[in-house]
Image (tube, rainbow, N blue to C red; front, side):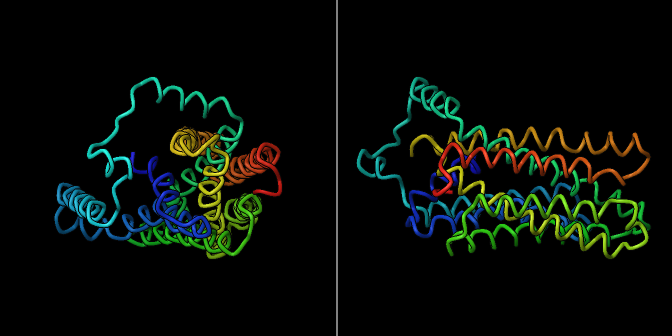
Length: 292
């Protein structure tokens, strides 16, 4: 629920010329969260166990609650009326129908699914891949955490580039191209004897691929039918992203089981990357090439 409402809230609070930059910083949440958890969890678990880890997460959430109460201004409607205006089901369904009856939110959502499915599949199986390569111990968590953290860096860089005038669709093209090519280096059989090269390729896969989420969040604001459907457009994008996260890892696992290793993982990621380029190109046709 926090994720769905954030882009619409940022759009309200940020000047238009700074919107892409702020969305870029905000979209770091996934890579930064996963990377931080992978780095910190082993030490926290060793000290306080799983229950303590969950209490730490609860405390962070409570701190964020107070931060929102203190620093995020109330909606103007609330300030004027003195209470929150809760829409009935009718307006909600009309807003949802308006969103799903336009092509833009669909193409953006499908594009995000192509990104999330391959990214989570690779990140999720990295520990198993490292074990097969001979790594063990805490180094597994550190290596995987760094891969997730560079993804957050990619999101931040994308926000800065869009703020400087680079068009988001071009960044999506570049991100998918990098993910497809780096996955070939990371998983194909001819690099089996160069584990460092493979790891650098995985870093490129996650880091350069990280420019995609920030770009798609910026595009989701543009493809929404109107300002009242930004949250539903982002919601639909994240819904298909979740489906991609659900489908991607089993597909990669099935391919790995079928061929007896990870050497054809790049086929899945390359297919997703090509599909992502096709889908985001459709956004250009819907919105207009000059605006994205």
